[in-house]
Amino acid sequence: MDWKTHTVFNQPAPLSNSNLFLSDIPLRDAVLRHGAGWDAERLASVGQQLGSAESLELGRLANRNPPELLRYDATGERLDDVRFHPAWHLLMQGLCANRVHNLPWQPDAPENAFVARAARFILHAQVEAGTLCPVTMTFGAIPLLQRHLPADFHAWLPGLLSDRYDAHLQPGEQKRGLLIGMGMTEKQGGTDVLSNTTRAEPVSHRGPGECYRLTGHKWFFSVPQSDAHLVLAQTSAGLSCFFLPRLLPDGTRNGVQIERLKDKLGNRSNASSEVEFRDALGWLIGDEGEGVRQILKMGGYTRFDCALGSHGQMRRAFSVALYHAHQRQVQGKTLVDQPLMRQVLASQALVLEGQTALLMRLARAWSDAKDEAERGYSRLLTPAAKYVICKRGIPFVAESMEVLGGIGYCEDSELPRLYREMPVNSIWEGSGNVMCLDVLRVLLKQPAIGERLDAQFAEVKGINRHFDQQWRQLRLLLRQPDEARARGLVERLFSLATAEQVLRYLEPPLADAWCRQQLDSRGGAAIPDEVCQRLLLRASGVS
Picture (spheres, rainbow, N blue to C red):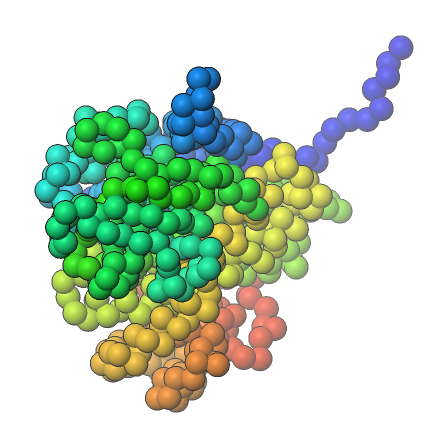
């Protein structure tokens, strides 16, 4: 007897085996525009590998099988180890092989290596986000350690600059590759690190590079399996920064006990922990009392990575939705050919066009950090980008989920995992309010930045009336920045900095559509159909 009840049809295939770089024309254009064309071939190879069904499956497995805390061995000896699924290790191997954790810090780093590294980061973010946590912290720590690594650990430098991933529990000087974590926040303070209570006392002598004994705790201790952590603790001179190795130079375990792993909304593949320091040994980085200043040197890099990561995840969500819309039919026409759906998808494509343009411009500014103007540009716009892009990502992924309908809400799709991932970058490395206050501090402490922005924006003045109007209004706000209205100021600043890039480099019809969508306070104007078509072609890799 034939029990077949129906035929399965009009069900789109999932997006896999695509080239994440070659299918993204805005990213390809920006890489060339900002002097990293030398990396295009490597990026195409990375994009092909990451877009494969095998890589996407690794991302799924790493999140379906989160890390496990091993506090004791079979004999009752304390371990404080973390066990990961093999998928985690394979993903980490790819990240390290592509030098996402250290490319610009190489002695022979090519020009504009920050731009190439930012593109690689965006590509990896589309596959799996948890593995980016140890990568971004190591990336932020390396330049600090290149200047201040204690003498006892100078043999670690080759491992920090290696392209190898080494998960073995061994002293750092014996490993082929090294990773660095961070530990700043405590139960009572969170962002307010000045309220930290962890104490550090010198073992023998005070001063940079000397060994101290730490007692206290960390409420969030990221990636506890890292080879070392940079942590904050109080000394007699105030909050100070310490280098805390997992294994001491003699090979014994440091006095860091893992109390538990955090049970998080998303970012499930990555181990975030609570720890206690029981006479843990740490080596002072810089001078006593300079802890916040030292950590903030890392903060700019990690905050920029938060924006890059959210953007990459937004790009993946959009790609999944667009691929679905090209296949799914409703009343005899594919979704992408339905006028209202074309508007939704084109609007998302415009958002990604602008973000790509600004992020890669910021990457170039980071590459030129010795230039005062570029340093000021990155210092001002990095927290603005983190605030806006990381906030924007949450409804953006929800919109992509809606394109797929019910199957986009089910765990068989990538979108639920992407949706759970989105809030974390708004919270880590400083929440939205912290980012906005940081922008205000930069404006107040470095008033010349406003003048440089004025000169930069003047170069595109007169091209678009919405831009001109918004810039006049922002000028007034910048004269007397108001903390209570900081979010609105930062949103305008981000929009105008993006518009400046869009007006310079996008085709005029696309730039005009972007300005109408993002800068016209009246809103509601439909994107012309020919512009919709052009945007969706660029987003699909068709030039």
